[in-house]
Length: 170
Image (cartoon, rainbow, N blue to C red; front, side, top):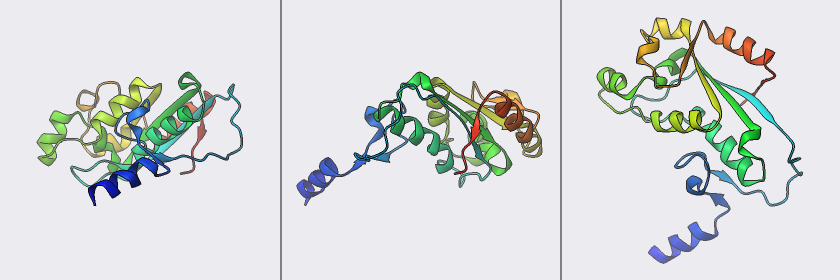
């Protein structure tokens, strides 16, 4: 039985992110027959995440950015041609708390911290809505290092659009 599981995993079309820029996150399926992606393509995409994870759980919507990076790098896009932005607001505002503060509030580790740190290290900007953050008593000093506080999610999206980012509808 153990060997059968190993064979299924080895020959599955599901790709595991351990060989990708974002380690431990961002699994995707290999699509061997797809329209070619021009190797000069530059992706500048903003992702919007408003729904927070269950306390002590990883936010799967944030994982979408890791999937985007890993999937495209595996299919020939240069990592430097992938410029993502994550705009967090609403109940997701607590998902960008530094682990020490998250642990104080929820008696659990912030399962989003390692993912967000890897995203920041891979050409991703992360903003938290100042309006939502204030509502949830989140200050800039309480954020994961590298996460920036915007006046609002609306402000962050407007500025990102002016910088050429498109909004990912997923």
